[in-house]
Structure formats: C-alpha cells, structure tokens
Length: 176
Image (cartoon, rainbow, N blue to C red; front, top):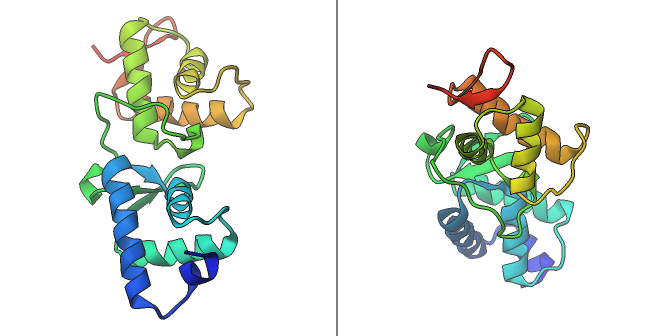
C-alpha cells in the first residue's frame, strides 16, 4: 500500500483494515506509543517514513477505532488495551523490540525502577533514573538528556504512587 492509499479519506474498508492492524499491534505491544504504532503500521504497509499526513491519518484511525489513549508528561501519547490498564504498574517490563526509551510508557519505566530497586537496595534518585535509562538501552545519559528525563518520569511515577519511597539517607528504596 502506498502513502496515498493509506491516507485516502472516505474509504471505510481501508480504514477498518487499518484499525484492525492497529488493534493487532496494541494487543501484542500495549501499552504502546502512538509513534511506535505509526512506525509499525508504515513498516507493514511498505511505507518508508511517517510523514505529518500519515500521522494525521493514524490520529483519525485511533479515534475511529475508539482506542484507549493517555498522554505522558512529555506529551507523548500511548494506546492501552483498556482504560483499566492506564496507570497499572506490572511486575515485569520488556526491553528491546526496536523501541526508543521515549516509546516506553511511564508505567513500564516505573516497573523497571521497582525491579532495579529490589535488586540494588537503595540509591539516589538520579542514579536510579540513569539505571532505568540503561535498562532500556541508553548507555550513558546526562541529566539533561531526553533519555534521563524520560526515565526520571518513571521513577517519579513509582514514588508518587508509593511503590518506592526515599529513606532517611536520601536513597530510593522499596516501600516496606
């Protein structure tokens, strides 16, 4: 499928097929960023890059398919399997899969922070954010980097939701 066919308005059959493709991506990878959905969908359709026109079409398809969406603090949008999954922190997280750390939802970043804290008892919040970033492939990250700021959102989410706490020495630890 070329970009013109992908973006053609008024074609309900094409829209339904693309919504089903999005639904398959969401079932496999949810929660998943809208940017990653666009990339996966373009790869499946043989479209080389995600343009603003394609992004607008995907926004329409997400509304048309009535997917559950949420936005991160940085403004990145994520699609969930159901509304009850928004804010849910699981015991596991997954790395790899061709995802950039900015394509990882805050709940999954919080899961990584919790897992790291359970293995390495207590560390300063800054170090924990760097460890979370490293778990998702960011080897070295300055506190001004996007990777660090994204990982720090996950640590903050875990602290705000009382999965983690700060002890008297200023170290982030699991809630006792």
